[in-house]
Image 1 (cartoon, rainbow, N blue to C red):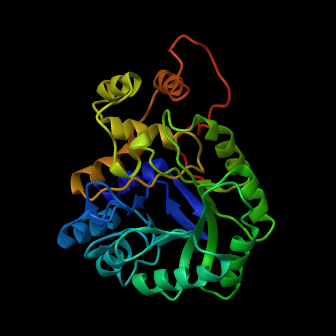
Image 2 (image 1 turned 90 degrees about the vertical axis):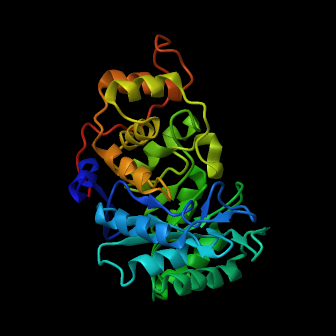
Image 3 (image 1 turned 120 degrees about the vertical axis):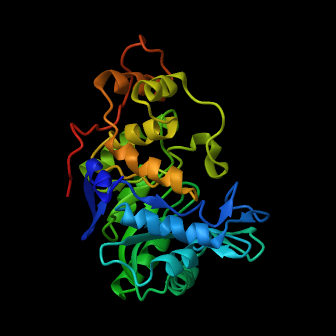
Length: 320
């Protein structure tokens, strides 16, 4: 596989930064097994560094991370710094603020507006940067984001942040944030059979030229523990027909939901990394997509159309 493989899925612009639509999520990088738990087993540092460097070699130029992605002895941000600094000019590192964990790995209350600058500065320190390419405000619940997003908008004006995004949000949060400052991406949980109610929000983002960046598009309800042993029969049948893995089919379907949809699969395994990148070149037929859409909406293959499919790209294409 060469770096040209990744270009098959096209590109998108996060503000003024162009990224390939298959990126890399760093959540699984700091440990083996389940992420975001205090007793996680640290991953071998050399392996983590090798995976990051191999990702860039394959053409990945969009890395998603956070200061709270860590295990005992390992921090995703510091692994990124060690592996990739001095950073390639085209590399876009996206981080998120809002949640935090104490040194033992226990979750802290979400940051108040006056605490967000400290979280931004910690990401800057760990990554060895003088500014952050994109910062997502991650929230829990339905309350207003105006005060917290406004605090990040001030840091953007101060030059610490280049672009802003949102994570784990509802449509009204996007409208609220866009009234304060430009939003380049929305990062929500989404995949085949995972929150099909997000379909309309995905379309709304596309209409507003906002990237939609699903997380757990492979793991699904397994979340930070990773994909479980059970898999949809539709996914398995399409995978067999293409000589592909279920994970590759899930990624390929996700990318076909619209040219503004970006994938950020994460792994600490070099072989899984290569397979994830190769998924961008997997061509699903109309019949494949119809079958997977039925699985996404929990319908049988003859149940007929249902509400709200995604905005599907007409080809691999490039959007910019």
